Image (cartoon, rainbow, N blue to C red):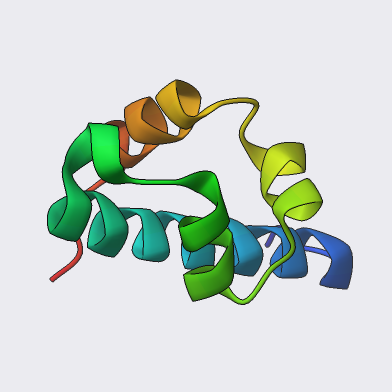
Length: 71
């Protein structure tokens, strides 16, 4: 069985927090009104950390749209 390391689990958890925050911010503000600052704030992360995961708002939006829907 393939177990994820603590570092990998933390990275996935942060990425999921970012995607969850992005869904909320994009839904509330639309693409033009959404800001990386607000997404980072709602995810509980710094903006530089957000940019370590997604290089642009466009890249984040694409990842959010490609992510499987949560139930």
